[in-house]
Length: 224
Length: 345
Ligand code: SF4
Ligand code: SF4
Image 1 (tube, rainbow over the protein chains, first blue to last red):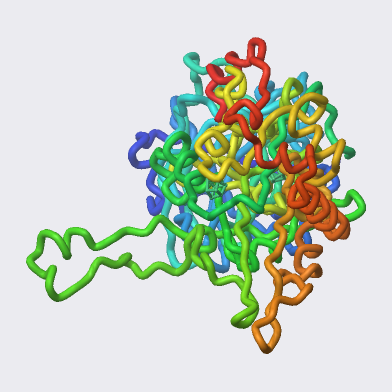
Image 2 (cartoon, protein in one colour; image 1 turned 180 degrees about the vertical axis):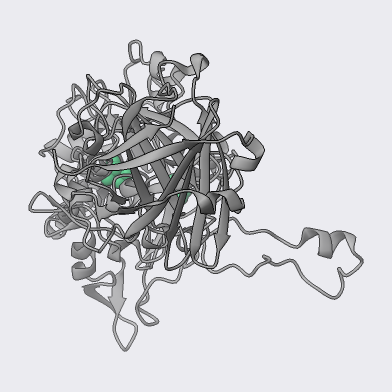
């Protein structure tokens, strides 16, 4: 495998309320990882129509990423720029901005399944944030392209801040979620897992598989 | 991908010579299916005046469908292009004491509606012309919507070929709306899902025809199965070939067929009736393809037979003397109720 970027989720003692604040000053002190995005490969799209998309997509070129946990909850802060933020479906803007985090359900999953949204053997868990419901992230799990299912209940929390053209979004969850074993990845301090990210530029009508993502492997290391 | 094979295909024939543009069909559908929040602007059944821009505005130029089997890029119609749900200033007119100063009007001003260009048509007096074109989802054999959906949320039922959007699988990506060349899919912003005509499948399963056809005072609609050789659909479409789909060149193989409209004759400068039809044949060909002229000739010849005191099975079928017996032939489905209970719209 090529060089793997590693995100270290630092342990802190701050509480959930503090960590969820995207403007919180402690975030500045954390190491950040810049993740370079590419448009998703169209050849992989399950629908021939989508493969014929003729305009440029994958407009978000990179995101800036930090992570922290307090032993009980884990948080990711994603920051990125868009040309024209879209926070609401309106007449001229049928799609909104969004971002997502992808973690395999099993910690030993191979990197290939991160690009294919999971497989029969290795399901993936996605945390999906959308600008029109900025504090209601959705929990999704999948076992291949086009198979995503949204959980009836989401135990995720998020808070977003739009400053000019820059989104700062904190997404978090309890690391252990016994109430959602089948649909949510279980995390503990000390483990390593693959992780990936994606972003949808609403103004560019990006949705579904039409998005920007990170094809290179990224490792999440949760500080013990 | 080629067309999808089904056991039987539910289909509709609409005789455009009988449509009077009353919109009873549109209202019948609205009352039955699209009364919930998020569905206000939806008209799964529309009736437009031709020539005209229709609904959504200019839909025939919005792309989608197939060319040589290859999906064509389509445009996503907006709510304003369909025509939004107009809000009226009832409060101001009726309850604020300003009733004498202002009048009832949509607020904000309406920009388009599902029958906005009603009765405009084309041509110059005294030779102006128009006809009505009711449209629903065509429950196509090669549905562009179904193929476009990356989530496989759209399916075509094996038992009757009805095309449905599984509301629990739809994520509101709206690729189907772009891909459908007839622009017959609507987006529900409240539920974040795409919705469209369901060919009244819960009624069809009970052996009852669709609401639009049952309520039609013009009795222009025939409903049944395409392979039922004793039914009116088979006879009109396959046997006599006097009913054809709209825009066959879109490549989706629709299962809604039209008996094209005969035209009144043009008047000359002295107001004498000529042999020239007011509706130009080229215009009808642009809608129904090259076969339409032949059908018009057949219909005229059949009409002449009746005028001459003879018999015409084709005309008798189109007239339909026994209502509703001559119009609908739908066997009761088996076990279809399950799909309704599944919550699929
Ligand atoms: S008319 Fe449009 S929505 Fe209906 S089946 Fe055909 S392609 Fe799909
Ligand atoms: S109810 Fe019948 S006659 Fe009236 S507009 Fe609809 S199709 Fe035409």
